[in-house]
Length: 348
Image (cartoon, rainbow, N blue to C red):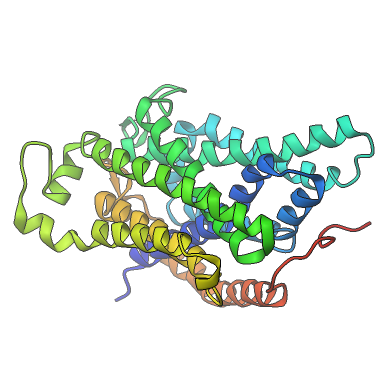
């Protein structure tokens, strides 16, 4: 018999990861627009995400809607815990979307600067909001009698702030690698510099978050068999390839970004793939730390799941629609594949 709660947990995990990989790079590009030297350079940067940015957010809807439908108990606990950062994220995404369109309509320099700043601010605020929610999620929420029992600002802690900065820097890395893939000439070289800098900062953030996570809950320590005072080789060694893979990918990405122009022919897509691999290693490490909990350290996947008949009914729709969405996404990326050129982008 199928383990429907586990299947839906995997669907949600894949949906969230696709959102991070895809919308992460366009939030990163939006953040990097603040470093553009001219309107033409900024337009080239936004042109790299213009055909796909709104479609990327589809996966956020699938993640939120899937949590509500498949794990209603978890949804009922987590939403009250994260009302404020969720509202901040949605407001930032809406404002960012408005700014994306209005910045092309602005005639006066002051108005154009306002909407350019709004696009940058909305991108950065959305990334930070998602990081705050992730940090608070990993830290755990207060639950009593199957309901959220904490305060409205429980999500705002030093640990969640550290995770928020890490997520924002990670998105900048994805965005810089995407610009490296999609542009040429001076902008590509500047994107390479942004990627190198963000990679160094991200590596430091990941190390700090990994150590801090060990102090969040003793169940994380037991899962990994590692703490500041004790190591359980039998538990740690089978899991060690995950963080080691992340470190290897960081080294490979640094080496790739350090190559001279003469040695970089034909491999512009490698930095983005390696950056995605770094995120995947971190995501897998997070899954190892938290499973089988969907509300960390309180409620498991099976305890929070809807009834099997509901999960089975929804699974039929998911089996039909998810391949369609994936095929359409692949088609759009294939259709708009290639380098952007000066003058590409939005036209009236």
